[in-house]
Image 1 (tube, rainbow, N blue to C red):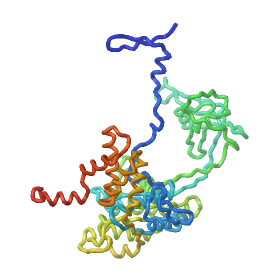
Image 2: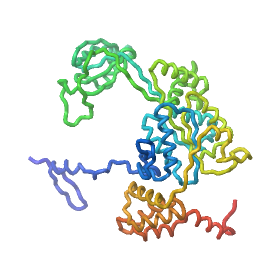
Image 3: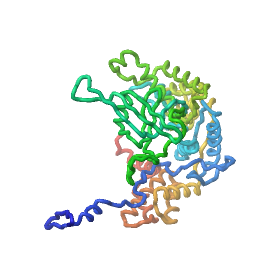
Image 4: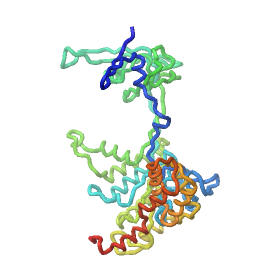
Length: 477
């Protein structure tokens, strides 16, 4: 007898077999459907594009041109990897759109995921809730990674037998609660039976641990971790299962294992601040402070230094990149200069496109809009405007990253716009031209698409001419 499922349409019903109903509920997705498709301004950058000797290759890893700046940043990256460079200030100076932010992103890619990089704008320090110096010091401490190594005694093995004893609830005689648990753990070399209290029994019940599971019990804290299902046990396994399958552990059941935690100084500051919140906050849940005291940070620094001396921790100094750093005021610059002298200080990279300009908050004019004493503490890396060949190559790379097909003539027309106006303007036109081609039913961008969007939108020069033309009719505030 065939089980039928009736699908009702607007004017009739259709009887489908059960097999068809099951198949109709499964839908295959096209390949690549799960890929994150959001594309940022620097998504195409994979590194600095240097060879083994630290020399810049003109086109590599998404980087184009700016060979001198890339080689200079490459030296900085090498010293950071060797742990020899900390508490230094680097200034990236150059016109807008010459790749200052791209250099910082490329440096972070070269350093790898274990070295923290914080990217912020100079205007982010102005908060109504916290002081400017507090925002800066928190950002700096987020850039210092701490790799902590800890040896702990643990019981580890496959559960071959588990027996939980229960007792009547002290306040409800009709309910029973776990009182103790007897566990047999087995490795490839040993088998031991343990007896534990109510806390471990409750953890095993809540995590659904039973025979065949590989678990880990901390001998000091009693914390139970379910590592997965043993591939060598007798427990029934399924072809489709969400449980992780791991081999049965080897060695003794009670062993010392090394655990590695990677945190930042800011994480440790927050943990220490909560722990030392005081008697009132422990009992009554006092409000969490938006700022961390200097005493808490000093205690964390002292603890980290002791761990490093004992070989239990390793410090990974990172990079604090402040874009539009001319937005910092004299107080912020003074604080940065003092912080660079600390033992636990990151590499600070300041990027600006200003020439000789006024220091924010003062009437003093200075190179780059920075105080002279801070400039004297830093090394300056200059970026220069791209030539026509570099503009063309960057647009080609961006087209590949955005999956835009375009003719050679359209690429040349975009290159003309980039040389005439700016690279940023040409990159914007690239996306708009692709959308225009799509609206016209074409899968490839042609010259007409580029010319149309170039006509519809204004670059900075055309905007200035427009403002001059209608200056008398525009409202001045």
